[in-house]
Length: 63
Image (cartoon, rainbow, N blue to C red; front, side, top):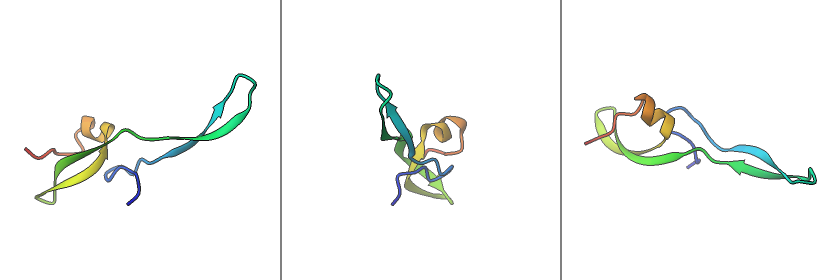
């Protein structure tokens, strides 16, 4: 399973580490994903979602 949000599809980004001497090496930027219980299609299940989707109300957390 890919490391991405189940709702918006946000996933890893590839970026550069830039040193003081301007040497560039590859690095990854990970989204802030949380594994939460949510209500999907009337059922309670685990989903992996980013914090922006949680905060904006796209995800309905199960009690």
